Image (cartoon, rainbow, N blue to C red; front, side, top):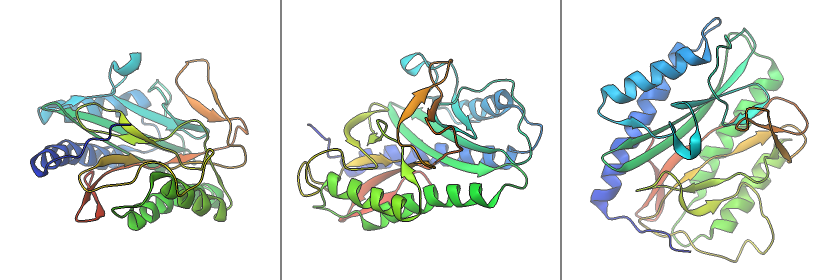
Length: 251
């Protein structure tokens, strides 16, 4: 496994791409309301990203047809924007990727539409809190598997489960690089495998399900749901390891 160690000027280039990601998510969050279609949100995001001299990196990536992922209710990740209009009580995951001058940024949030249930509030809080907890404990010398172990424990202690077979990832000159960062332990000891080092840049992205960790694809061949069919949530930040700690670039 070759995990790049980025120089300071490279991290600053990644920060610029991720700043556009963060601003796009802010605009999208302010645009989410009852009656707005997923395609409208996709257009808002693409227009803003291109206005900043960047490109929506998801568009065409592995054949993905849209600029952003819009994952509504039971869809955990990779939801394709459609004509569906948001309804009061929905929850929507918004995942944005940007390429600027050959460097990539990536971040995601899940938010409610109008008034949402207490159960959905707890689901979203779990994803968000897990992300920020993970970022707070990252340090130079920690093993990635140890981080995955802590993430899983945090999620399960909140009464939810992590989605299997999908993970966080390195990011830099490509939208997805080494390492893969699971939200759970999949064999081996937490004290094994590669260590986190200064200069590494990667995405942490908890994907939270209600009961069943196993996933399935919907008929569009992109939208990922838990086999329990229940609502789910997803949060993500791009972080860089600077002076021994994780610094959020996508803010």
